[in-house]
Each structure stands twice: as structure tokens, then as C-alpha cells.
Amino acid sequence: MSGQGNQAASWQQRLSAGFKAWRFGSVLGIFLLVMLGIGWRLVDLHVVDNEFLRQQGDVRTIRVESIDAHRGVVTDRHGEPLAVSTPVQTLWANPSEIDPDDPRLGGLARVLGMTEGALRERLRTFAGREFIYLRRKVQPSLAREALELGVGGIYARQEYRRYYPAGEVTAHVVGFTNIDEFGQEGIELAYNQWLTGEPGRKRVLKDNRGRVIKDLMLIRDARAGRDLELSLDLRLQYLAYRELKAVVTAHNARGGTLVMLDVDTGEVLAMVNQGSYNPNDRAQLSAENMRNKAITDLFEPGSTIKPITIAAALETGKYKATTVIDTSPGFRRFGRFTIRDARNYGAIDLTEMIVRSSNVGVSHIATELGGGVLRNLFARVGLGQATGIGFPGEAVGVLPAPPQWRPVEESTLSYGYGMSVNALQLAQAYMVIANGGIRYPLSLMKQDASPQGQRVLSEDVTRAVRDMLKEAVASGTGGRGQPGLYAAGGKTGTVHLVGASGYEKSQYKAIFAGMAPIDDPRIVTVVAVDAPQSGEYYGGEVAAPVFARVMGDALRLLNVKPELEVTGAKAPKAASGERG
Image (cartoon, rainbow, N blue to C red; front, side):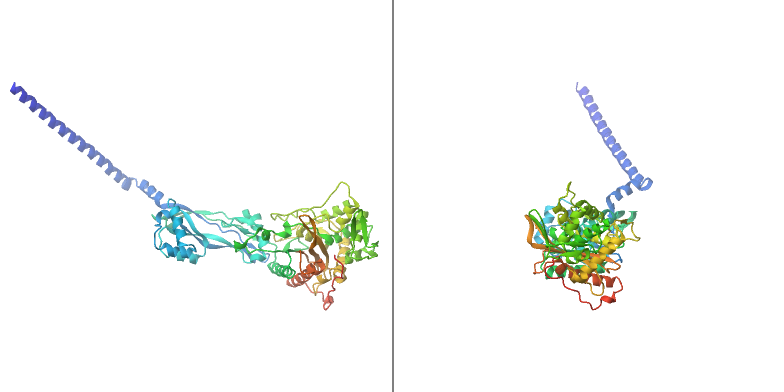
């Protein structure tokens, strides 16, 4: 029995040893196969097919970045820049790469113009992010100073910042963009798509800290925005702004507007407002000062409409410049409503009616013509209609069209009450009188060729009205509107401002609309001053002198030959009591 037990034990030992040898061989074989497979894969990746590793490396180090596009330049008609984009730097950070306790952050905070505590707190707050802005669109010198501090995770990239060389002088026309160069006001908003460029794309090689090592390939070049050439003449714009600001300051007025048009093209040569703002410094922006009042603000034009009423009378053929109207006793009553003149002018012809600015006289004409006839001509010269200038926020105005005209409505319409216009519409109406009866579309863009206009009045009618306007400046209510070496024609207007509860008895708008040189008009200008407080408030006292200074200097700048026959003549002052 013992022999059999020894044989069984020996057999078990041999079986266990064989199993161990087999297990060791299997493990060794598998290990060798794995190593062989890895070795083969290494050879395959590095020698036979190395494109995979190259692609994976590129994924981790090659990036596609955008290339900012240059926004189009806005210039005046002579190429003077009004809005340009200048290269600047934007500082950004990768908070995950920055130690919020880095002692160098104190110096960085000083460069960035913020407190050290605020910077550290911001980095801690966004520690999980890989991108935050530190300062956008700063001077390159400031960006260099920040980078030279050597704080890891701080980077800079080039962007563009909009700059307005003329500042507040052209602010209401040009407008401004936001920090991303998207138009917010004015031309910048109206033509944003035109001015905006198309960003490009490029492939770059970066290191493990995200810094660009090399530009590898241009995928698509950036396309700069298209330029705009405005109709404005910056010389006239500066001149108009200076004089308007001076009169608003001198009379402690609430504000003012001035518009200047080329009578033969409909181009806007100058358009200014008070108050204004500096688009390069947004810290003091206010909604009140941002409005382009020449287009957005409506007012009753008052006596400046009387020449259009006279034109309607002349057009019928029933009236001539010498036609006499009896205005006695100096007022007309319509029930509880009374129309008055400054005094009883008696029997006067149409020319004297404009010279003296007779409300009673034009009201007689209006009731004979009918409100429909007046409204028709007012609409034809552009009143109560959009100018088509394409400027955002334009107010159309009100031109009444009741089913049945009452005599009082016809009368008030004849001298500019019961309707509303903006300054640009009023200038357009006077442009029609100045150029012989053609209504041109208005434009803020420079015109390379004469536009197609529409005849709305005859040359004979407009010539007769211009003669009357010449007399109004030479000897009537517009006496202070005489621009020195040039004979001018124009009409004053003084209207009550409208408040929350109706007309404000002690608040007026002083208006003057005119043209020069009167025998061959070149430009039309409308001046409106809101609520002058210095004692004088009539259009002939406040607005007419501004017209005279602006027109005289503007005509000299445009090289218009002086009319020497008026040299030395002293412009007469508006007769006392004649409001106009």
C-alpha cells in the first residue's frame, strides 16, 4: 500500500510542475506577442504610416483663428476722414494658467487701471475658464507694458477701434459704433452692412500655453468694409457748428439746428445740432443729445411757410406780385379765434405781405384758394413726407387733410400753424424755390452726377417768390440775415413751442430759412433755435444773424464771386414789433 501511495504522490508532483511550466510559457508567450504587437505598431506609426501621429499632434497644436476685418472709412465730400478704424490691442487671460496669488498681479492691476483685489477676485471667480477679457481695445503701448510683466496666462490680440476725427461736430450725422464695431447711431447704423467687413481665417501653430508660434496658412483673407463718401463739406460743417453753438450759448437757448443744402443736387452740405456729444468719449452720453434734431424733431414752421402760400397763389394765375390785399383792421376773427398782425398794414401787395410777414394777408389768400390747394403744393415741395434720405429715426411730420376745410384751418395753415415739419423738410421746400421749381431727392451721399429731379413749380413763380424773399432781407423782418458781400433772400419765423399742456406762452422757436446768392442761389440754409432766454426771441433777431454769418463764410469757402454792389451796405434791423 505504501508503494502505491508513493507513486500517486510522485504523479501529482509531476502534474503540478507541468502545469506551472505551461502557465509560465503561456504568460511569456502572451507578453511576447503583446510586445511584438506594440513594437510593430511603433514601427508602423513612425516608419510605415506616420500620418496618424502627425494628425494627432496637429490637433493639439494647430488652431484656426479669425482675422479681424477693417471697417470701411467714412469721409466728407473732399476725402476728409470722419470715421476710421485704428489697430489696437485686446488683453485677455486664461485663468486656469494663472496663480491668483502671483505677486506680479499687483503691477498688472495698475497697468489695467483696476484694483489688485478686484483682479485677483476675478481670476478666482473664473478659475475654471480658459478665456476672459481683461481690457478691450487699448493702446498697443499699454498692452506691451502688461505683457512685459511676465505674468503667465496673459495674452493680447489685435482688434480695431473706431475713431471720429471731427468729434462732436459730425456726431449726429456719422453716429458711432459699439465696442464690437456694430453701428448704433447715424450713418454707422444706416450703412452698417456696407461698412462692415468680412473676417478672415488663418491656421496657426501654438505652444502648450496657447501662444502663437507660427502662422501656417491663410485660409481666407479678411475683406475690409467698403468706404462711404458723404455729401458733407467738413469746412462748412465746422463753420455751421461753431455759429450754432455760439448763438445757443449767447441766448441761453435749449438747443438748435442748422441744415445746409446744395440747391442743384439736393446734397446735404452741413447738418448740425445743439446740444451734441463726443463719440470718442462715451462717458457723458445722454439720450437727449444723441438725437439728430434736424431729422427727428418736428415743429410748426410758422411764417417761413408764407412764401409757399404765396407760390400757391401765383401758380393759380389769379395773383401777381403786385396784387393788393386789404389787411385792415389788422386782424381777422373766426368765432373765438382771432388772427392778428403786428399792426394794421392796410392795403398791401403780395411782396409787402412777405416783407411785413402779414398773417392777415396770407389768411385772406388761403380762404380764397382753399385748404386743398395749399396742401397740394406743400406736399409737392416735400412737406409732410419722408425725405428718403435713409437716416434712422426720421420723423415725417404732419400735413393735415380734413374731409372739409374750415376757414380757420385754411388760415392757420397758410402761416405755418396746424402742421409740423422737420428742419430738413423745410430746407427742401426752400431748395425748390431756389433752383427754379425742381424737387431733387435729398442725399447724405456725394453725388457724382446731377440727380433726376421732378418739376413741381414753374420758373416764373419761383423767380417771383425769390424777389419777394430778397426784399424781406433787404428791408423787412429778415434784415439781420444779410450776409455781407452777398445778396440773400429768406423768411423769418417765430412760433410758440408746444409743451405738455399745449402752447407755451413764453417759449418760442426762432427760425430763419433762406438762400444765397439770391439772383443765382447756390445754397439753402435753415436755422432753428429752441427757447432763447436772453430777451430776444424773434426769428429775425436770433436765427437770422446766424444765417448771415454762416452763409457769408460758406459762399467764400465755395469760391462764389462776391456781389460788390452790396459792399458797405448796412443790413437793416427788423422793424420793431414785426415778429415774422
